[in-house]
Amino acid sequence: RKPRLPAFQMSSEKRTPVPARQVLTDPVHFLAWGFGTGLAPFAPGTVGSLPGVLLAWATLPLPLTWRIAIGVVLVLTGIWLCGESARRIGVHDHSGIVWDEIAGMYLVLLVAPPQIAMWALGFALFRLFDIWKPWPIRDLDHRLAGGAGIMLDDVIAALYAASLLGLGGILTG
Image (cartoon, rainbow, N blue to C red; front, top):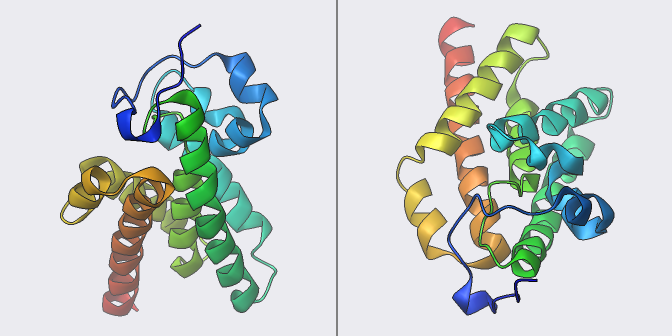
């Protein structure tokens, strides 16, 4: 059994194998790993974004202020949740930790009109910015440790995607 590394010595290997049993039986990992979606063998961040889409769809009937509050709770909860999951496995921002993708995707869909094409575009834009990591996302990803670092790059990627969706709506609407 591999000993846990202290936070200041965390591995940077984002694909370190983590047993499915560990993820599915530990409540912190289960949530941080997107209810198991982070275990996807390919593109776990993309697969892990899907619960964010489902949550956005499920909360559409709620007033916008409640949906914004849910987005804030997702982000604030994610700071602790992602940081704790990373600490427990000894890998900062493991690719299987996808709560940040769930929150980011949810934030993007707050501004997207509830149309399949717009949600698909929002999904694609969010994934593009999360993977590409244009400035300052890449800097934040490398400089901030713990849960704040894990969450913030996805929040900024969501802001970029939402901004483009909003700009597109203004230009076409």
